Amino acid sequence: MSLPPEQASLWDLTAASGPLDRRFLLDEAVRVPLAALADGTTLAGQREALRGACVVLRLETQLATALALLELDGVARRIVLCTPDLSPAHLRHAIGVTAATAVVSGQPMPEVADLGVSVIVGSGAAVIPETTPRAAGVATEWALFTSGTTGPPKLALHDLKTLAGAIVGSAKPAGDAVWSTYYDIRRYGGLQILLRALIGGGSMVLSGAHEEVSAFLARAGAAGVTFISGTPTHWRRATLSPATAAIAPPNVRLSGEVADQAILDKLRATYPGARICHAFASTEAGVAFEVDDGLAGFPASWIGQARGGVELRVEDDTLRIRSPRTASRYLGDETGPLMAADGFVDTKDLVELRGDRYHFAGRRDGVINVGGLKVHPEEVEAIVNRHPRVKMSLVKAKRSPIIGAIVVADVVLAANEESGEGGKRLEAEIIAACRDALPWYKVPASVKVVSSLAVSAAGKLIRARG
Image 1 (cartoon, one colour):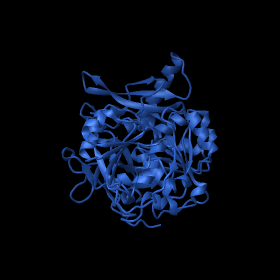
Image 2 (cartoon, one colour; image 1 turned 30 degrees about the horizontal axis):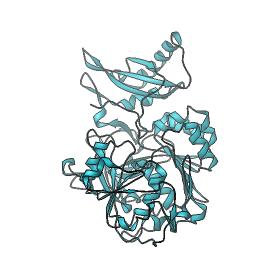
Image 3 (cartoon, helix red, strand yellow; image 1 turned 180 degrees about the horizontal axis):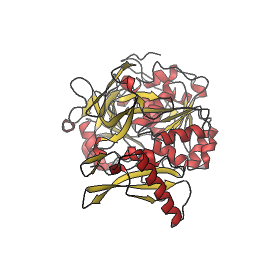
Image 4 (cartoon, one colour; image 1 turned 180 degrees about the vertical axis):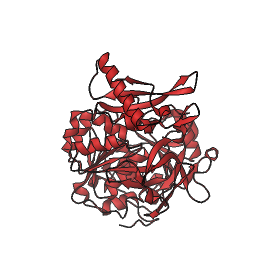
């Protein structure tokens, strides 16, 4: 399947990729056959009124958002995809920097009445008949919020061609594919899975914002999920639940964080028949590559090659990407350039060459300084997570009056641990494993068992950044 840059909308590609009457979008409460949208709408008869407009999607559910995207790509001039946790102040900021003229919401929004935008109160996930025929023809820009920022979040500008660059032209899965993800589709990682489902001829099971892992996996299993994705943190939390047996997906995907060998091995043991891959992508650079050989990191031979139009290089120890899938620019004059003059995007993700493979060492802004020596928390966590009783860990800095900072670790175990000698033995075992694998300054000075670790709305461990 090719992607004509001006003519093909998301709906066009979806309708062309497989019979609509066998495909669906499903959340906790509603199942919507894609065929219902062929002559239906969720936009209260206002789809044509939004032609050529800059539209902010501020909808309460993933399902309502997915349906609105199917209607508005090729109709709106620009779609601004709000994340579910976007604050009112950041919403107002986004309306300004994107030159929005309309907001599509599930309810009236008096808080933006003074900004001069019209508010379209849609019908959510309820599809009602639409008498006006579908007509695309508008080249739609997609403004997506980036993650990991402080203050007003940045907005990166894409179009369907850059967003679907890793999807269009790829082999179509055999049979009726059912995709699912722990991600929210209003973030880049989740949106990629939604697009893979729609453009690839499949269906999609959406996760609930406050849904228990066991309930989500039960729904996904009942729907016959064949592809499922999440961050390594999502998967570590999922493997704590016996509900992982509710699904038997042929394809498992990780992205968004460093995928260490421990979680890859755990997923291989949990789903022995699955293709398990970890992908690298960012909102700015798009999807760069997938690794499916069962090993952490990626082959060093990929550096300097053009694979699928994507070029990789390492400069100042960070991964740089040049790709036709890269966003065109940031919106807002205060954000600075998205890419260098030569087209490469600095991901700010640190990599280290070990043998014939590059391994991700963490974020450049997450380094712990131990007496002038650099420690990447993710590198230490990869060792801690190998312990058979550790399900997930968070390595962080603790202030030291002598050397500035020392390394400490919090760990979550598969079962509740009694305090006392059992905990001390565990701490000694983890520290000994770290001493065997790491230089002295990277070894945790202490290990504490905790009941849980803080996780962001995007499904990533929350880290204090320097």
